[in-house]
Length: 334
Ligand SMILES: [Zn+2]
Image (cartoon, rainbow, N blue to C red; front, side):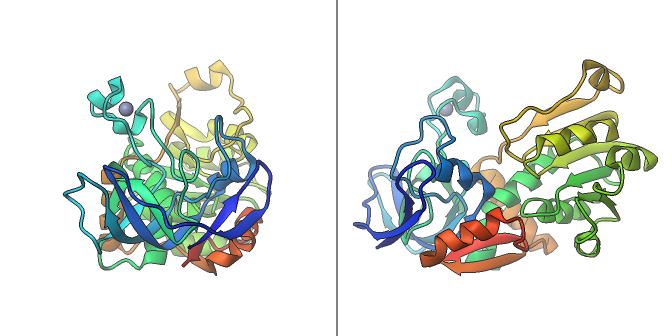
């Protein structure tokens, strides 16, 4: 089979042949049909995730068909359409798992980081990571919902914002274009925040009632003019842009951080104390949360906008994603 791997931190994508892997007990093998290219693949490409080992095949937005079952797998069937997302497995034994908080498992695994992900024709995944894909979604549409989709959907539905509340989505990109759609379908008054005027019309088409160009406007002041945001979903991995938005929160407002950057967000205690504001990080969710996301997408018509590339062009696809010019999610098809 063909795989697109990274063999050392900072190395280029190499398309090579490998033996088709066999699933162990509790695992399945998936014939991969589509895999999203996510900004978080940078951790694998550049080696910035603690403890990552090489060679490694990136990819945590997988859609495909179960092709072989390992021992002890009974609830999944050969030929079933499934996906795997950021939540790539949990141990069922740590304190958080025993409390049922699988998302925060102490030993949570991530496809493409902890084990080989979806930039390959066949992939092995643990059964607790599997997500059933509804018929009405194509493989290429389902793939980005495995991370970008569930992350924005799950963060917003747990944001505390109620229908009619002002909710800002920072970044009109791979995550943001989904966040705007979900926010609109949840009944929020959605303000999309982008750098430059380019995406204004599109953001409104996706369901934003307001577009704020943070290059030409002070976005926090603009949000305050609208009454202050109950929630701000920060999707673009720019700590500086996030810091600038904190003053746009209304009383009890929450900045939800999903864009993964390593540099610090700057905030003063007084900014948080006035209005009892909250800053919260959010990681995707469990496979059951992802199934909720997919069902909601089918129900509401939310879909990712995608550009597809063949697996052989993984390097080109990754560069396109990193350029920030893709509209909006890059997906590899096998
Ligand atoms: Zn655990």
